[in-house]
Image 1 (cartoon, one colour):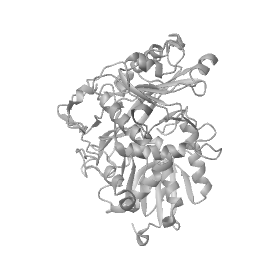
Image 2 (image 1 turned 120 degrees about the vertical axis):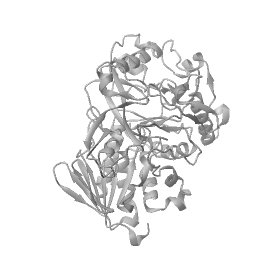
Image 3 (image 1 turned 45 degrees about the vertical axis):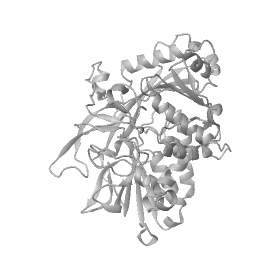
Image 4 (image 1 turned 90 degrees about the vertical axis):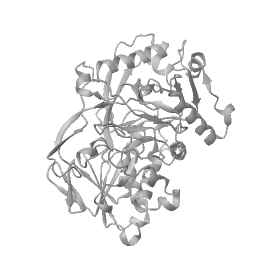
Length: 488
């Protein structure tokens, strides 16, 4: 976009990591000095993580460059340079970032492919080779790397520990970002929930809020995460999925003992936990997640003949499904003997809603049919938060076209609209994704675990939903054929 076409006004819908980082980048670029920037979000500030509904806000989030995709690995490495700035007014300061390391493991059943690719990429970034970040094989070696008191039991058969990865207090980090944007004084914050996109022919003019108020702008950017599909039709392109998170309150002795352990993620089971924080330990599962099919008024982009559509929308029950709680409790008790198998249940739990794309690449692009009046900045797929300090810059690079000159267009290509019911091969050559006959999308890069196609309502009622069967064979980057079912 040239200065002659710079919009006079931009409306950002959503105050999560995508929306806030985009607002910050726009506000800091001279090209947008005369552009009115408005951000609308249901919250007037970053809420406490115990009641937050956005995926960006929690007590802890992993910050890692440990990706099998070299482009995300490099971008995360750039982000970590900011996370490591620990002055009081800097992102990593006042305890917002801790570098305990990441222990990444897998069983020898397919997920080790991701681990080994990630190891190759972080070794390249660190320049230390095999000696700097050695590969670990066997449960005993993995148990030693856990640095947990007592006779820790290894989870996984192969892995490595990257001591330059860590975790962030995402609630406090998001609050830092919100306050940074506010302090600039050039972004107008509006409290409200967008309920409908205002379209005038082939141009979008803004949104209508739930209370009937209209917010109008020359350009609208939808950064509403798992709620985006209520505003525009994303069927066959992106699907909201619920992930289960649990918390166990620790004794003073346990809290002290578990404060120095690394984040531990077993990609074969999807289970992971963090060092103790706020007097508790957080455990979760990076899974294919749950759907919540809901009938809603047909949003923008739906078939003109449709009055309503069925899509997943977030919902927030008091507890997670019983089976998920059991798996998480077993994981803690079996790998952290210092808990002395005392954990019988989670002290609290919640759902975290991702907006998943088929390739786990973000969606930063024009929504088809409305030119540059409507953009998407969403599709975090469960791994967007760590890019907080650099994400907005890359998003705006794509929006104004400077990604072509700055980054050879890599993010424009990776984050493009893939087309409904298709899988867009990424620049790194990945085709490890699948769109099924129902328009649901699945990333099969071995970064997810668990059953596919699970219904949240059924799971909460103790019913078992028939797992999705993936009939096609997908090929990984190296050309090896792997069945989608091998990931389960």
